[in-house]
Structure formats: structure tokens, C-alpha cells
Image (cartoon, rainbow, N blue to C red):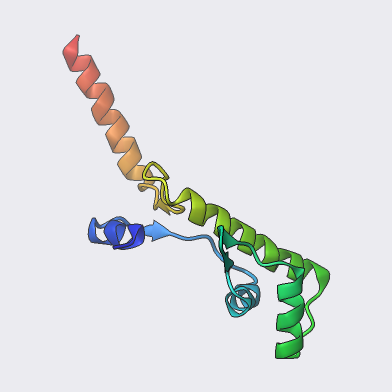
Length: 116
């Protein structure tokens, strides 16, 4: 079971970053998030981008290609880090509502004043 599924079962609402260039994410998955080697996962490189461009018949600008490669590097890095049991999930639960925070703070202050 994934961490996201566990969080969902616990009732935690997860917020993922907004993606404004969705087409690059699609290209990232078409090219491949990473390559498997005898030493484990490695990020895709310029040759992989070039091969994908030739097969797909699409030409990426340098910044688009660089960002797809960067996504792959981040994917591999997170994949390696996620093997550790102590690694926090790569997402955060939604922050509590402001009213809940204020109430919690007031309750805490009241409990402190009662202890005196």
C-alpha cells in the first residue's frame, strides 16, 4: 500500500503541487521516468530525449528538454530516498484550517493558565 493510500485511509487530505505545464509531465512519462541499469535506476539523458523526439516527431526546446531531464533526476533521487524507512512522504497533508489552529492555540493557553 502506498503512503498516499495510507494517508487517504487515515482521512488526511493531500495537496499536490499545481502543474502549469502539464504537457511536459506527459512527455516525461512518454520518454520514461528513469532507466534501469545493473546499478539501479538512473535519470534519462539527452540521448533519450533525442530518441523520443525522433520517434514522436516532436521537437522540444532546450528548456523543455532540460526540465524533462530534471524531472527524471528528481524522480530517481526521490526513489532512492524513499527506500529508507525514515524518509518522509514526498507530499504534505493539507494544513489545518486557520480557525482550527486558533482554537488549538487558545485551548493550549487556557490549559497552561489552569495549571498555575
